[in-house]
Length: 135
Image (cartoon, rainbow, N blue to C red):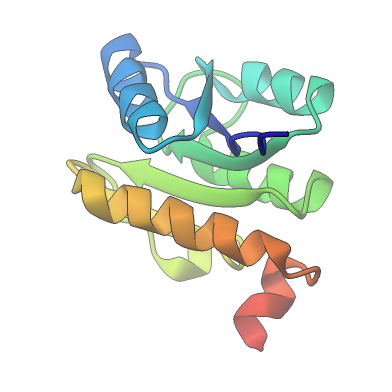
Protein backbone atom coordinates (compact mmCIF):
# COMPACT_ATOMS: atom_id res chain seq x y z
CA UNK A 1 0.00 0.00 0.00
CA UNK A 2 1.42 3.38 -0.99
CA UNK A 3 1.54 6.25 1.45
CA UNK A 4 -0.64 9.22 0.60
CA UNK A 5 1.05 12.39 -0.50
CA UNK A 6 0.91 15.20 2.06
CA UNK A 7 -1.85 17.70 1.14
CA UNK A 8 -0.98 21.40 0.88
CA UNK A 9 -3.59 24.12 0.41
CA UNK A 10 -2.49 27.20 -1.56
CA UNK A 11 -4.45 30.37 -0.75
CA UNK A 12 -3.76 33.04 -3.37
CA UNK A 13 -6.12 35.42 -5.17
CA UNK A 14 -3.97 35.83 -8.31
CA UNK A 15 -4.64 32.81 -10.57
CA UNK A 16 -1.20 32.75 -12.26
CA UNK A 17 0.69 32.95 -8.97
CA UNK A 18 -1.62 30.30 -7.49
CA UNK A 19 -0.98 27.96 -10.44
CA UNK A 20 2.80 28.51 -10.18
CA UNK A 21 2.69 27.64 -6.48
CA UNK A 22 0.63 24.52 -7.22
CA UNK A 23 3.18 23.48 -9.88
CA UNK A 24 6.00 23.83 -7.33
CA UNK A 25 4.06 21.81 -4.76
CA UNK A 26 3.11 19.04 -7.16
CA UNK A 27 6.63 18.86 -8.62
CA UNK A 28 7.92 18.36 -5.07
CA UNK A 29 5.63 15.33 -4.69
CA UNK A 30 2.84 16.86 -2.64
CA UNK A 31 -0.87 16.98 -3.41
CA UNK A 32 -1.99 20.55 -4.02
CA UNK A 33 -5.38 22.14 -3.37
CA UNK A 34 -6.28 25.73 -4.15
CA UNK A 35 -8.39 28.53 -2.73
CA UNK A 36 -8.87 32.08 -4.01
CA UNK A 37 -9.26 33.56 -0.54
CA UNK A 38 -9.69 32.98 3.17
CA UNK A 39 -13.38 32.07 3.07
CA UNK A 40 -12.83 29.36 0.45
CA UNK A 41 -9.76 28.11 2.37
CA UNK A 42 -11.77 27.77 5.58
CA UNK A 43 -14.49 25.90 3.71
CA UNK A 44 -11.90 23.46 2.31
CA UNK A 45 -10.24 22.97 5.71
CA UNK A 46 -13.62 22.27 7.30
CA UNK A 47 -14.44 19.71 4.60
CA UNK A 48 -11.07 17.95 4.43
CA UNK A 49 -9.22 16.59 7.41
CA UNK A 50 -6.14 15.65 5.35
CA UNK A 51 -4.75 19.17 4.73
CA UNK A 52 -1.42 19.27 6.52
CA UNK A 53 -0.03 22.65 5.43
CA UNK A 54 -1.51 25.95 4.25
CA UNK A 55 0.59 28.25 2.05
CA UNK A 56 -1.10 31.65 1.98
CA UNK A 57 -0.48 35.08 0.54
CA UNK A 58 -0.79 38.03 2.93
CA UNK A 59 -2.84 40.41 0.80
CA UNK A 60 -6.18 39.06 -0.38
CA UNK A 61 -9.65 40.49 -0.82
CA UNK A 62 -12.41 39.13 1.37
CA UNK A 63 -13.15 38.69 5.03
CA UNK A 64 -9.54 38.42 6.19
CA UNK A 65 -5.97 38.70 4.96
CA UNK A 66 -3.38 35.93 5.10
CA UNK A 67 -2.09 36.86 8.55
CA UNK A 68 -5.58 36.77 10.08
CA UNK A 69 -6.23 33.52 8.20
CA UNK A 70 -3.04 31.99 9.61
CA UNK A 71 -4.10 32.89 13.17
CA UNK A 72 -7.61 31.53 12.56
CA UNK A 73 -6.18 28.25 11.22
CA UNK A 74 -3.78 27.94 14.17
CA UNK A 75 -6.69 28.31 16.62
CA UNK A 76 -9.16 26.04 14.80
CA UNK A 77 -6.77 23.47 13.30
CA UNK A 78 -3.61 23.65 15.44
CA UNK A 79 -1.93 20.71 13.72
CA UNK A 80 -1.98 22.39 10.29
CA UNK A 81 1.41 23.88 9.41
CA UNK A 82 1.58 27.43 8.01
CA UNK A 83 3.65 29.32 5.46
CA UNK A 84 2.81 32.95 4.76
CA UNK A 85 4.17 34.84 1.72
CA UNK A 86 4.02 38.40 0.45
CA UNK A 87 5.53 40.40 -2.36
CA UNK A 88 5.05 43.80 -0.83
CA UNK A 89 4.73 43.39 2.88
CA UNK A 90 7.46 42.39 5.24
CA UNK A 91 5.92 40.46 8.07
CA UNK A 92 7.65 40.16 11.41
CA UNK A 93 7.69 36.88 13.30
CA UNK A 94 5.63 38.56 16.04
CA UNK A 95 2.72 39.04 13.61
CA UNK A 96 2.55 35.33 12.75
CA UNK A 97 1.25 32.42 14.77
CA UNK A 98 3.96 30.48 16.56
CA UNK A 99 5.54 27.95 14.22
CA UNK A 100 4.53 29.73 10.99
CA UNK A 101 7.17 30.62 8.40
CA UNK A 102 7.35 33.75 6.24
CA UNK A 103 8.63 34.05 2.67
CA UNK A 104 9.14 37.30 0.78
CA UNK A 105 8.13 37.08 -2.89
CA UNK A 106 9.76 36.30 -5.17
CA UNK A 107 10.82 33.34 -3.07
CA UNK A 108 13.41 30.79 -4.03
CA UNK A 109 11.51 27.62 -5.02
CA UNK A 110 14.06 25.30 -3.43
CA UNK A 111 13.89 27.19 -0.12
CA UNK A 112 10.09 27.07 -0.15
CA UNK A 113 10.03 23.33 -0.87
CA UNK A 114 12.62 22.71 1.85
CA UNK A 115 10.51 24.65 4.37
CA UNK A 116 7.49 22.53 3.43
CA UNK A 117 9.51 19.34 3.80
CA UNK A 118 10.83 20.50 7.19
CA UNK A 119 7.40 21.50 8.50
CA UNK A 120 5.79 18.27 7.32
CA UNK A 121 8.63 16.16 8.69
CA UNK A 122 7.93 17.68 12.10
CA UNK A 123 4.34 16.44 11.72
CA UNK A 124 5.32 13.15 13.31
CA UNK A 125 5.85 15.09 16.53
CA UNK A 126 2.59 14.86 18.46
CA UNK A 127 3.14 18.19 20.22
CA UNK A 128 1.52 21.29 18.79
CA UNK A 129 3.65 23.62 16.62
CA UNK A 130 3.82 26.05 19.55
CA UNK A 131 5.31 23.39 21.82
CA UNK A 132 7.72 22.15 19.16
CA UNK A 133 9.07 25.66 18.66
CA UNK A 134 9.68 26.17 22.36
CA UNK A 135 11.33 22.76 22.80
